[in-house]
Image (cartoon, rainbow, N blue to C red; front, side, top):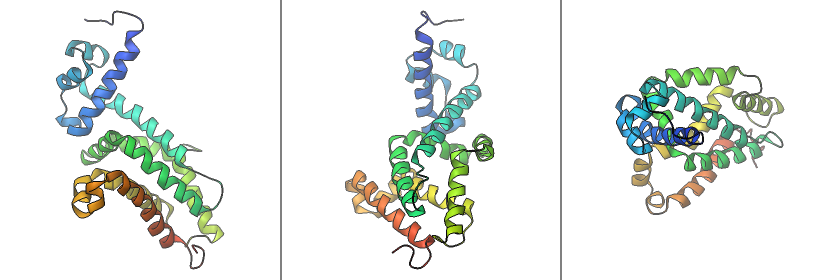
Length: 215
């Protein structure tokens, strides 16, 4: 059984494996991914890959858990819990879209997990929603406070969260369709993303705000 040659190598090798696995899982899904391709991308032989992770399922679960924690951290950093709900919503949309733009493989991995049934994603989300003080709970509470204060109309917090998140995420996942429909997206995607931030905020906030509150 091959082993790392120095004490400093394991962490670096594992990082290369994780990045290679993310790229392959994001592009081909869990079922379509092959351990040999992951090993090739990581610059190691397949035997060494199996030294770290005996099975593809074990590797997938480890990569997904690691990335989900990064996602939760980004979600928390995107939240602004002071000020009005409108200010918090604008900040979240801008920060979350920026994060997804820089981590599109992660977004594709989550999409592929959904297409495969989403059982692993469901487990992680259930834990996040059940964890006191989690960013998911914080966003839900912020929506409830905005309803109670009269800033926005009565809405289901969970439905509203789905609408906000999908509006920030989906256009990255269907970029070819977006580029076919929008000339700016086809010629300058970064400019389109900036315009998208403004559009998503205006549509969502003015749709949620009580008459006169969004003026």
